[in-house]
Image (cartoon, rainbow, N blue to C red; front, side, top):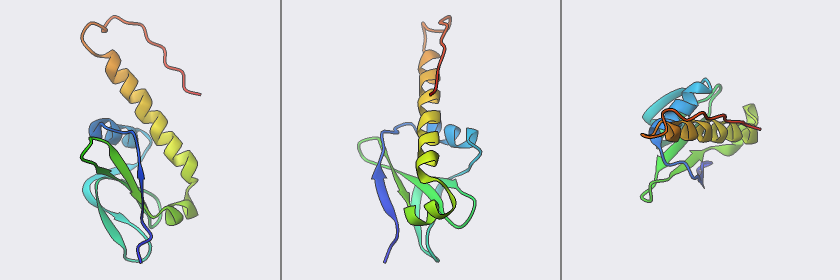
Length: 116
């Protein structure tokens, strides 16, 4: 019996996701296996390798979004899952905002980003 759960997300940009994960200190693998309970594994397009025996992965969906796949019970044994996902989502949102500011015509814009 699989312990993996799949959750929808609003993340759409693979490069921004990988950059965000690296900025948070995670080792990032592409087209890799997400580790779960025992020897269970599931394939994901992007994997954040966590300390311990469990990872979090993202699978690209047909609609352009990414779903999160993980053994949530296993991840939560060593990590605060809510804080972990909040950190990833916040970092991604900041990176996405900064990326949009770099668009043509906005090079001279003065932008201040506040994260609460």
